[in-house]
Length: 89
Image (cartoon, rainbow, N blue to C red; front, top):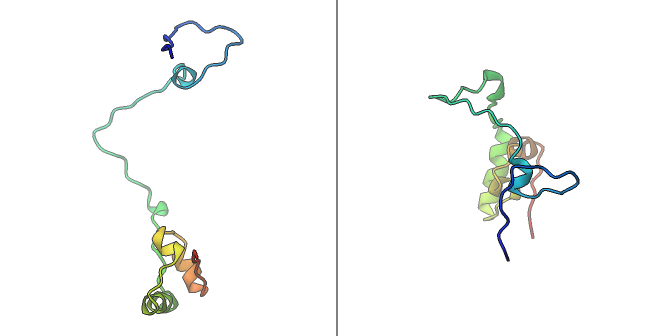
């Protein structure tokens, strides 16, 4: 296949694809020396209750792993606290 050459002109009615489609979108890059800190409200502690630990121990004793644990689900504490877990068979 012949390689398409990049054009600077836009032809009305022509459908652009790939890099040609997004090439004309202006992007402003602001160089910084350090990354901005995340706000305090975005930092949430993972709830760990005795029930969560009980469910984890129960899974370990039966040599099981839940989908939630394998996927590092952020809602694991909430589900385990309710006594539920998801498994793939």
